[in-house]
Amino acid sequence: MDAERTAIAKACLDAAHDGSLSFPQIIGRLQAGGFEGYSVDYRRNSQTYYLPDGDNIALALPQSPAPVAAAFDGAAVEALVHWAQANGPDYSYVAFCERVKAAGCAGYLVSFIGRRVVYYGRTAETHVELFPR
Image (cartoon, rainbow, N blue to C red; front, side, top):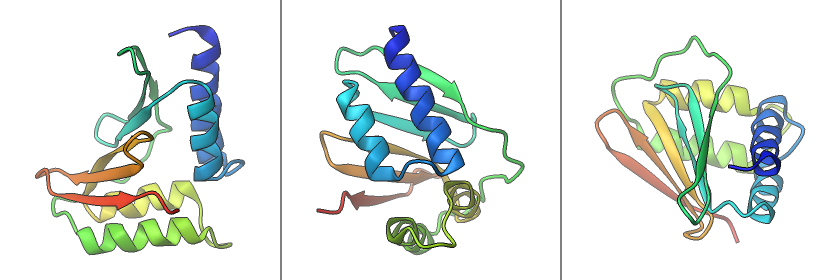
């Protein structure tokens, strides 16, 4: 991974956590940088960004004390995604991460080319969310 793409990925990760960019803005920057998607792994505390040629970069997530709940609650995950999409004054990505882990989400895979996010639990149960049009 070249330094420019690493810087883009790091800036987007930081912006998600400090709230300076929205999810659509982050997607736009990552796509402009040539990325085809990324994954978040709450159990490893890492986020991996993928290029079409197979190259990737894994970055550490800020430490979080909240564990991933054992049971996956797809309805709760869906509600949290809609809360995030509304981007109201009470929303923050940090709060989203804590709440989605409490709903049993162990991580998620974002596919720009598939225009979807697959949220998964510790038992490999999933919830698929298509990008809004």
